[in-house]
Image (cartoon, rainbow, N blue to C red; front, side, top):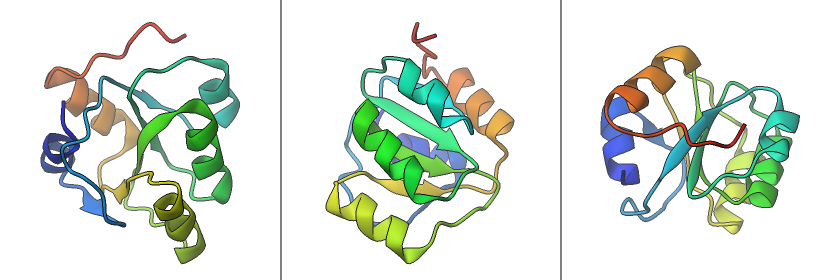
Length: 115
């Protein structure tokens, strides 16, 4: 699934500039970043309610391709700037994590076998 489709499905607002044709193969929803670090993802999207710098660092280490902040949360400019420097697309959606994951799953994004 392309990021452009994810943006449409989640009515997401991009927070930095990125290629909307980036391919996403799986998604994970987590507020416990150690769970993300413990798993292996391939071309994954991270959905989270956390808005701290560790989210972007975790995405970098785990090779997460993009981050969606749920429940309308918007990270600070320092976080958006770091994501931009690392070429990690970030966006926000007003949907909850549960609803976001359900919408993506219903539309064909597989959860993968990470955990």
